[in-house]
Length: 402
Ligand SMILES: *Cc1c(COP(=O)(O)O)cnc(C)c1O
Image 1 (tube, protein in one colour):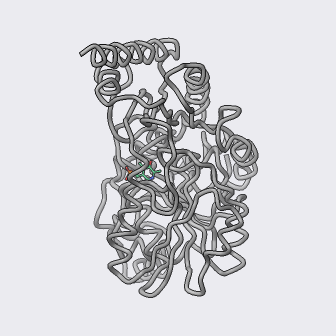
Image 2 (cartoon, rainbow, N blue to C red):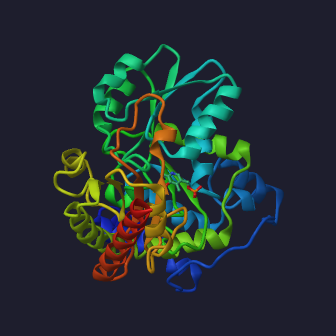
């Protein structure tokens, strides 16, 4: 299929075909995995011609090969951005993007619900280099205007927020930020390039932990940055200056995962809705923080701005003693305990948003558990949680009897 024709097609078609050029690879559906550092040239003229095109074509392994370009082309097209870049992890994507726009003496605004290691990078690295960092209430919306200073360069969003899933009014934030000349960076890992069209919503730079749903099988680390046209050069230069790139096998895993991401996401959402709806009716649960669930915090904004939901959300339990919660988590049969998410399997993780807030105060009733609902049969997942709640109750009863 020719590129111009494909570009006009719908998202599921783009996801399936964009970046695929079988005629360039003996007809093979997928591009080969190029393992390359040195790229050789037959003549000085050929080398000069290749180097004259900045950030295009194959010039050196670190700058990408046809394997890299295939995934970059697909990601940019699906999200509606200008170009994409691949780096070794989601965290690398965050640091490349932030470094692109700040210098000593500048100021950045960061959502208070941001991914913990991003907060760490801002507090430890950016402040050490003389950048001022202010956290803002993720629900601030257009009110962000009041926090913008003459030296503010970046408004950083993550929606829904890590652990607590606040949905941000990104169009309102972007309008206020752009009126004052600030770039809007957005960690779109939860939304993926497929469910949240960052550029239609006013984002300049979209950041992805491709490690999650894009790779989708818990077996590779990968980061992606998609930008609009004005933001491409600064971000691409930042990536070159920092020396970041992604390994060819990991890029291939990303490309392979991407082709089935739409169907996986649909199933994750369906399963997560089943589990979240059941949890909403449980006496142990004070709140279900899943924006796709009617009545959940942020549901209306989610419905306005997203095309769907993934399988990640949190629940807030009613106050419960730690030994009971530990007994629940220790005995899970299907839900495994571990960082990351977006693979095919279910995960559960105790989390502590109260330790990661400075602009706002986390007001949850009791312990917070983050769930990633995988592709298992949701009836089995519900039984696993139900048995967990029974262990929690038994442990609490035993403690009370002592
Ligand atoms: C996991 C995650 C990251 C970091 O991605 P890695 O590939 O693990 O470095 C960044 N942002 C969010 C929201 C994440 O969940």
